[in-house]
Image (cartoon, helix red, strand yellow):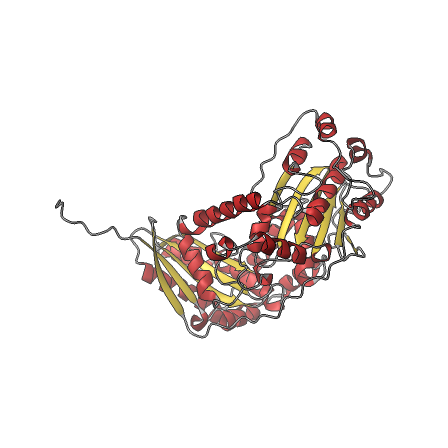
Length: 492
């Protein structure tokens, strides 16, 4: 759900005109909005050395401090004084993997509702951020988490912390049945656009449904089913919010040019009073393996056929998950890789190829795909793509191939670390700290991940391809151009 930002003039006049929230005194537990003067006053001390410069020994070591408030809120701080900007990145540890049966799509629905206003900020969330020139303001939902993020000038950090704390503690106080209905319709329309009415969208949905049984939380789509979205009541939404949007189920990461002591004081001021609520315990869920190949054809309104193959692989950041990251790069990480050279250059049966590892809590999904060339046979293209994968498992990569794949991943990570926060809230330094904290409990796990990456051998590649990417554990979805209805010969 993109929230476009634009710079505004007369920022202080606008903020003064908005005024303080009603009832912000002792009788009301809600946080008082920071005044413009206070929001602009705190400046990082020039005398303090910045720890943000990458270590000469290990460029993947992101300096951070992590602590927890008494109410359970996790806080991660990363100081970088190179630019007068601050990124605030909030992760709620809830996604489809936590949704109860019959509540599919609730996490994604809340991604939208969280921009609909809260008790003390009212419906001015976007206006307040636009007024201070905020950028990268958005929210996203994945299988295991929902996040919200924004980057602002350093003097406006207090304003962002107030806004984020208000929707963490007082969202449903401002939610009305009318606003719920509006966002329910928006989400339904988003599903139609992404799946039902989007080229190859039906095939993406078919793949998720084939990889996981109907009672598995990853079955279907992150966005949820139309049926579950339709029957969501106000009480259902309130109950979900109270359970999963509590401080104890969230992590706030702040990266950029800030004064640590002042920032901690603001965090305590705005988030500290939020109630202590037990972090929800999700019942353990198992992911049944695929023991026989699955193949399905999907007709769609497309010009070219497309073949996608997927396998279930180990959960995020387990040792073999890192090896499979290398495998994905070996297969389709650029034009020098095996799928491109064999299918596009040599055989000319594909115009595009791709490979992806989607790493998650309950299971990861490894996928390869190809856009079939106009005159090529989709069945033949599928057979040849499968052969490339099998061959990598039989013979392994050459030393130059393996080195190139590792260098490509290393450069990708280094490029990503140049930013405070990235698109989607999972990249940049703030997103990277969040992602590793979410999946491993250690925000600094990137150093261990890179060490494991460097240790991957050709034998590791062969073993993992043979073990996880076997033909018997494969799901193949082939998208075919929809056939035109038969002509009636022009008869009336």
